[in-house]
Length: 189
Image 1: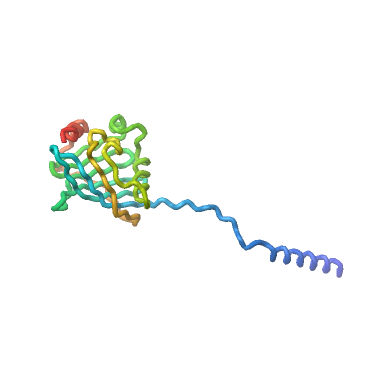
Image 2: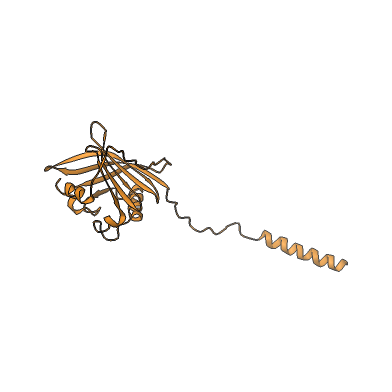
């Protein structure tokens, strides 16, 4: 019995010594920065208009993997002129001045957009623009709208704070127009 007690004591002493010799450092894998769920910014949009250029302000709001809203406002009055709402499946263009709208499915837009364009790439573009040193000014050509080559969109004053992003409701006062009609209108600017 004494012998078992001595052996057990010796084993416990060895375990205690080995435990005390372990390193205090632990290996930690590098942590990837988490992409925020929400993003908002102010925007400045410059577009050609009747041989001149018009600059308007507004805002961009995004809830990751769900919805992006762009609101364009008149310079002095700060009244919303247009709203563009993009989801993974459709785009809603709302012309507040002329009380009309276009609702286009993803399949209708695919032939008009640059190859490989999708909601996830647009999200990434916006998140990258919000990073320090990220590209936050885009031309129409860079956004895949070659007819608006002189247009420029600048995003600034970013926030990743949580917000409520309510889907746009289209009032009965608005008239739905075909996507092709809106494209013709944009090309005549």
